[in-house]
Amino acid sequence: MSDTKTGTRTKTRLKVDRPRLHKVILLNDDYTPREFVVMVLKAEFHMSESQAHRVMITAHQKGSCVVAVFPRDVAETKATRATEAGKAKGYPLQFTTEPEE
Image 1 (cartoon, rainbow, N blue to C red):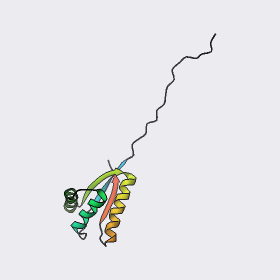
Image 2 (tube, helix red, strand yellow):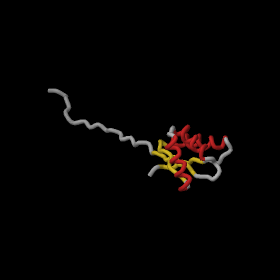
Image 3 (cartoon, one colour):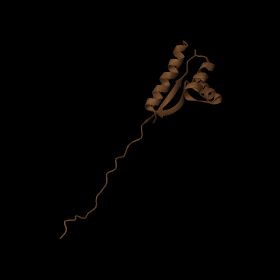
Image 4 (tube, helix red, strand yellow):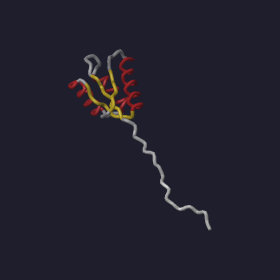
């Protein structure tokens, strides 16, 4: 006689959720020069001149504009660096983040 067991073995797979994405938002102000905002968007978010100009104009007209969507840590880092670039030049330029819906 053999002591072999037969049966099915199930494998448990862990389902890993994707990291929640966050929006980087440019807030309009009436003091930061438009050219400077475009320069920051090009430098920090690697936008073309025309993309950066469109984002800046949208924020100017509507009060704010979504710049890009990233994982939380990347979004917060980019928003902080862009805001600090404005502070370094004495401008009230501000970028914020919020979770994407």
